[in-house]
Amino acid sequence: MTPQEAIKQLETRFAGATGVPVEFRGEFTVTVAREKLVEICRFLKTECGFDMLTDLSGVDNFGDDSRYEVDYLLYSLKHRCHLRLKIVVPEDNLVVDSVTGVWRTADWHEREAFDMFGIRFHGHPNLRRILMWDGYPYHPMRKDFPLAGLPADLPETAVDAGRAEAAPMIGGPFVTTSGARTAADREPRQTDTASERFEKKETS
Amino acid sequence: MSEKVQLGFDQKVESRDLIITRLDAAIDWMRKNSAWPMPMGLACCAIELMAAGASRFDIARFGSEVMRFSPRQSDLMIVAGTCVYKTAGVVKRVWDQMAEPKWCIAMGACASSGGMYRSYAVVQGIDRFMPVDVYISGCPPRPEALLEGLMALQNQIGQERAIKAMRSDAPVTSLYSQPKGPIIIRGEYAPKFKA
Image (cartoon, rainbow over all chains, first blue to last red):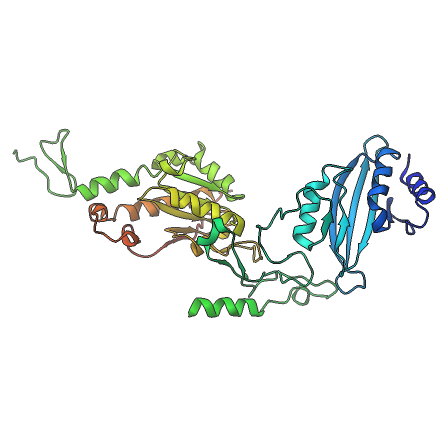
């Protein structure tokens, strides 16, 4: 079975729940309805042979109407082909059904997406943060979160380390913008407020 | 006593097996030549730390080949790598479990200052939560730089007032304070090849 055939089967079986499939350089992507996600995933696994979830990731399209999406990269070991599923997650309802019941590997991936983007996965057996510590108040991969970070309390085991502080960003080309012609324009030297705060604290 | 007696640091009597010295000097000498490291290998600097332990650089020449993975048996914590906030608690806890006297080397840019990771997750230098005796620059530092740092630390240990520090009325915080402030190793060891 090829990805095209799988998409065709999806379209007949779940009419109205799939968007227009996109092909880009041999990669096939189909957007599906959030409500039917688990059903579609189970169908793809059992009927179409996509037995492996390679990756699951959150995406923040900051500024768009539907801000978040979740991507599922599927692979069929039997047919040796890839398929990408996308679901759109609006900002005011950040809940997605968990696919841990379909692929067990989704467990940690969904925890990561929850940790970094704050997308909650309904039905996940153990939805805790996986990279940042428990009790961290932010979701740092969101586009509106500053790279330097924001002050936060540390977990109980690390209270001796003080507080998590914003990192100084002065002098560094830590944020690159695309499109500018010269490297100096692409990577303006940072003089943001985080570094000023840091220096004020150091001198006082 | 015969006329062979020499005055000085290690006086020799009869030039045989007896050495007279200050207890401070003897303790310092023992300590500085047996600084067993607690290898806190957090990132890629740990590879250079391993190289320093292997035969080419051979940290055993300085008495520090005994990498103890137990804080109870180690004297010198070598923090080799990027320390994130989540790990900071573990590093601090291991440091607290180490028995005095103890020393710390911040190996590499990340441990010293956060390095290139100006990010929400990375502690901007381990000296934010624990004392550091020697900072070694480099990303990662060459094993020679680590060895120079170790030698500088040995030099510092050799100047400590061990007996005074062991007295029960000595304030804990100043037991093993750094006499001249932290040591910074810049690690410029570019090999000079001959054509």
